[in-house]
Length: 220
Image 1 (spheres, rainbow, N blue to C red):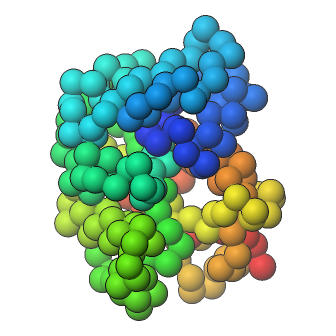
Image 2 (tube, rainbow, N blue to C red):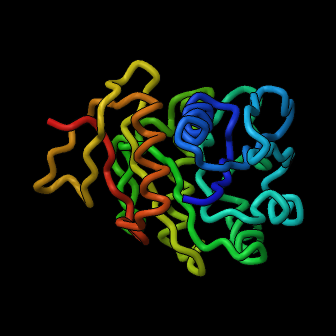
């Protein structure tokens, strides 16, 4: 694969994607909101782009230049708890920046607990949205991403929404990917950041689940 852009590169999953790219000679542009020194560059081919707000189309376009795909690894933390860091309110800006940079592929991480876009909210997500603090806000944003895709956002690019079972202490083994629960061999058990990073980078190139929301988790 040629260059990938990683939104949320400073987080746990983002750092795993960076390392996977470094270990496999895949050029990358790591996109962070601040403190670019957190990304350790070891090759001249790699870049760090500081984009304080995902609504900034010009900075995003510059970050996406020469990339084959965009991969998101965003989450809700105490330092990223405002709309400028959320995907759902900024999909239009992201899509416009991608198209201006001639990038048409995006892989978006989400949670295993969501329904697929267009299928309504799951009972699990309905519950987690009511939890106070970052967990509830994170669930609200993850559901908003699902709802936005179901409502037609990113229709001009090839998106995949990864309903991911992922945790830093998850199994470091190849996950299984299925279109939905019926007949799948998925479990609710997570894989590691490293395993999910490998799968997401491979899917960005393989395009097996374009316009779909595969379940990706530990195999039965």
